[in-house]
Length: 222
Ligand SMILES: C[S@@+](CC[C@H](N)C(=O)[O-])C[C@H]1O[C@@H](n2cnc3c(N)ncnc32)[C@H](O)[C@@H]1O
Image: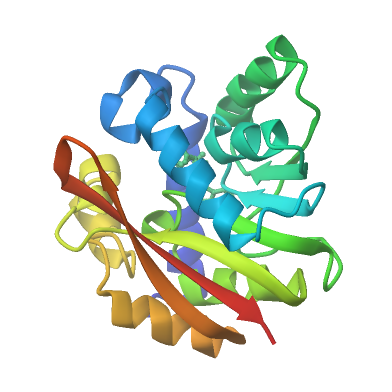
C-alpha cells in the first residue's frame, strides 16, 4: 500500500491525464463508446438487473464522456453523473444537451463522495475500477451512497490488460491495485468488504468479438 503522500501524487497525475484536452477518448474504438452492440448489451443487462423498473435515482461513477449516464437517462432514469475530470465530463454534457437528455453532472472524487448515505437506488460504474488508487475505499463509498437493497454494478477489469501501464506508464501502472486487471474473486472479496451482499457475476459477450468479453459484478447494499 502506498503512503498517503504517494497516493495523492499518483491521483494528481491520473487526474491530469484525464484532464488533458488533447486526448480523444471517444475516438478510441476499444473504449466502445460509439458501439451500438456495446450499448445494447449494457442496456439489456442493466434493465434486467433493475427488474425493468423505471424512474430510478442512479449514480454513474467516473462517467467520463457519459456512456452509462446517457444510456440510463435515455431509459427514463434520474441520473447523476460524477467524474473528477471536467474535460471528460464536458463531452458528456455536450452530448446530453444535443439529445435533450437531462443529467445532473458533478465534479467529484469516486473515493470521497459528498452524497448522503442511501441517496441512490443504484450506483453504476464502467471502465473505472482499474484506474483507482484505492478501489476498496471507493467501493465502500459506492455502497454507502446506495439505498438499502439498492444495487452497485461495475465491470471487472480484465486480468493482463495492463491498462494502468498503457495509460500512465510503468510506475503508476504498477502501483494501482487493479492496473493490470483483477481476478473476479478479488473484486468479489472487495465488494463484500465494502458491505455489499448477494454478489453475482455476469459474462457479457459481444457477438463477433469473443476476445473482448466483459465481466460485470453486481451486489446489494445490506
Ligand atoms: C476509462 S474512463 C471511463 C469513462 C466511462 N465510465 C466509460 O465507460 O466510458 C475512466 C474515467 O474515470 C474517471 N476517474 C478516474 N479516477 C477517478 C476518481 N478518483 N474520481 C472520479 N473520476 C475518476 C476519469 O476521469 C475518466 O473519465
